[in-house]
Amino acid sequence: MTLVDTDRHGRHGLAPISDDQTVAAVDRLIADTMSRLRADWAALSAAVVPRPDVLHTDSVLELLSGLLATGGKRFRPRMVHWGWLAATGGNDPASYHHVPRIGAALELLHGFALIHDDVMDGSETRRGYPSVHAQARQQHVRWGSFGDPQRYGENIAILAGDLAHSEASMIAAELPAHLRTLWRTLSVELMIGQGRDLVGAANGRRDLEHARQVARAKSGAYTVWRPLQLGAAAGGGSAELFDALESYGIAVGEAFALRDDILGVIGDERATGKPVGDDLIAGKPTVLLALATQRFSPKWQRLLARTGSGELSSEEVEGLRQELINSGVIDEVESMISAAVQQASAALESPAVHPSAREGLLRLAHRVAWRSA
Image (cartoon, rainbow, N blue to C red):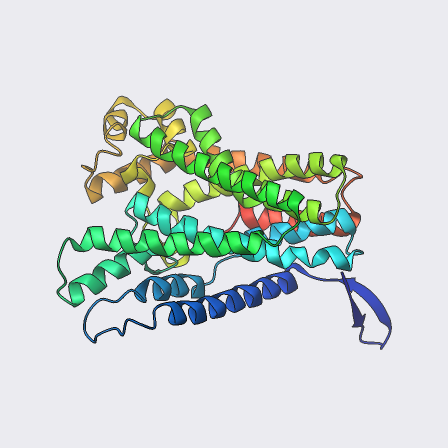
C-alpha cells in the first residue's frame, strides 16, 4: 500500500506506508474491538447490578482494558508489516487489509500471554504497573472479601487472559484460511514454549541447548518469525522469501530472547517496568543460567543450585547478578546477540526480499537487540 507524499519543493511521489502507520491502524482496531466487547459485556451482565464497596465481575474486563492501555513496543505488528512489505514492496493495497488485523490479533494474544505469564512467574509488576493478578488481589483485600486474596487474584487474572485470547481468536477467525493455519501454528508454538519454560524450571534444567530451545519457541518464533511469516503470506510471498525471513527471524528472535535474559537480571527497573532478578529467583532455564552453570566457581555454583527453590535472599540474588557480570557471562551473551544480528543482516541479502524492506528490517533487528526495555 502506498501513500501520496509531497516533498518540500512540492513534487509528488509515492512513499510506502510506514510501520508506525500500521501500528496506529492496529491500535484503532484494538480500541474498536474493546469498545464492542464492553457493549456486549454490558448487555450480557445487565441483569446483575454491582453493589458498591464489594467485588464485581466487571473487574475482569476493566483489568484487561487497563493492561492494554499501558501500550507496549508493538514488535509483533511491526514484524507483520515488514513481512508484508518484503513480499509486496508496498504494491498490493488489497492484501494490506489483513496486516492490521493480524497485528491486532497478535497484540491481544500477547496480552493473554503476559497476564498468564505473570501468574505463572508470580510477577508483581508489568510495564511499571501492578500486574493484573496483583491488582485483583489488592481489590480483594481492599473490600475485606472472603477467601484467599492471592488465589482470587490469580483466578481473576486467568479469566482476563482468557478473555484476551478469545478476542484475539475472533479477529483471527476473519482471516483467509492459509493465514488461520499459520495463526494456529503460532499459538501452539507459544504454548509449547511456555510449557518448556515451566517444565525446564521444575526439572532444574541448566543445559545450554534446552535454554536455547525455550528461547526459540517461547520468544523467537512467537515474536519474530511467525509474525513475519504471517505478513509475507498475506502479501503472497514466495518460498524463497519465507526461507530468507525464517533465517532472519530465527536470528532476531534469539537476539530478542537473549536481550530479555539480560534485562531480567541487570536491566533498569524504571525502563523495564519489572523487578530485576525475577528469573534468578524462579530458576528459569535461560541461556544466562546455562552459561553460569559452565562458568561459575564452586562457591557460586552452590548458590546457583538454589535458584528456583524460593529460598534466595535479596542479598544472594544481588550476589548472583554481580557474578554474572564478573564471570563474563553477560559479555558472552552480548557477543551472541551481536552475532545473531550479523546473521539476520546476511539473511536480508536474499534477492527474494524486496529492497524497500531491507533497511527497515535491519533497523528493527537493531532495535530488538539493543533495547533497554
